[in-house]
Image 1 (cartoon, rainbow, N blue to C red):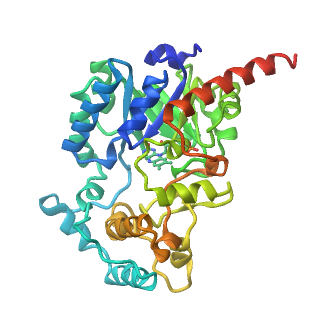
Image 2: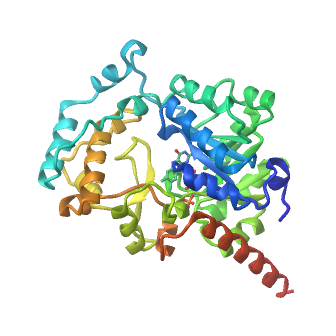
Image 3: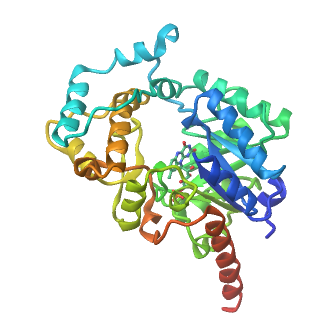
Length: 371
Ligand SMILES: Cc1cc2nc3c(=O)[nH]c(=O)nc-3n(C[C@H](O)[C@H](O)[C@H](O)COP(=O)(O)O)c2cc1C
């Protein structure tokens, strides 16, 4: 397949596999797509190790890295960032989360689980260390979500010959990103898992291709099949950026409990909620959301206070759910898009990639027959 995106990045198929599991990233790249690793899930030294591993697995084939640098975030004291951010969380919020865990009988963590420093680094300064690591590797693409790229990212990309991409959910975001000099726009519709806006991919993609002035646009949100990929190309996209579908991959690191819940879910079982990160993110609806929606529950806090508030709770819930704990299974959730309703099995990421691409080619050929 040839599109402006395959030409720009040097991949065989215009499909991106976004995931936090290096195994998925390597598998998508090796299957002819572009694997992109979610860097914000790691500390700099962990990211370094993961990128080295991906390079060993992919033998020179292109792959990318994704950062999450919010334009709006709560600032802390750089001297002791985590403590100063924690100090801004009202006692009422800690009590609410503590009571919620008690109500569902969630056991205490068996080993230290706090990852507050990762949440606290959700700002341009925190991302700088991850950027240094990413640019010390042979990445082909670097993407950014939740706002215009951090200072220097575009210039560093240009200097290093790395394609700079940005996720957008509205036309006005796209105009700002183009002004900042990004090479590729990712039009992410509301169907998507993770942080997402309110405009559907079907409406957003043509809006963004129109303003992109010839720069490649990838469609994201609601794409997990060949028919959906063909539809995205028909809308003018130069390729597709998929996230949720890889949560049904064998190589994905999510626990079996959430994968089982995904397999049972329908496309109506997700919601946009700020209760995990402080910004609206699409995830699987569970008892967790019912608790936050009850009258008298506190309002979620802004990023990164909300993740600092709930991260430990989520690590406890994930661990207990994985062990089959009933209360934890009721609360268990993770970021996922509406395509979760199409999951039927857990499969190797390479099989998923090949099936989407093959079905897309078939669909395009069939559409030609309509004329
Ligand atoms: C579990 C999960 C985590 C995500 N985290 C991020 C992230 O850290 N950075 C980012 O740019 N996008 C993130 N996204 C959004 C994806 O990059 C992608 O745009 C989206 O998944 C596409 O829609 P789909 O879920 O319908 O495939 C995440 C998506 C999921 C499902």
